[in-house]
Image (cartoon, rainbow, N blue to C red; front, side, top):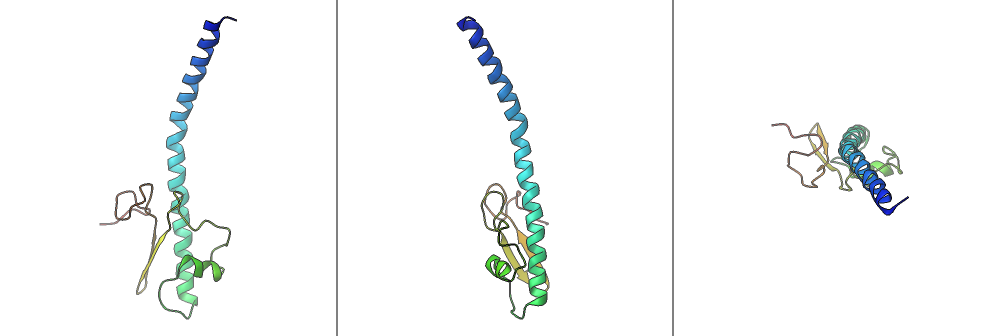
Length: 116
């Protein structure tokens, strides 16, 4: 094999790797969004159960949910991007959300999306 043949193989491998990367990276972001959406639903259910069964008033923290064994201690307590979930409770309404990929609340990529 000559150096030119080896370089051609290396270039072809780089092109294939680039193509695979371009196909896989968007799917990774979609998977993070799906996982966070599922986690938000699970945390919201745990918060509602806590509020229905606890004698304490107000919104629980993630620590209170774990201590009350409403969320598994080994489960993730942050979203797929490492940001804490925002838990808010108003009278009978419970809201749990993630800041999404940008890490900023009140933006278009919040999970679940804002309703206007």
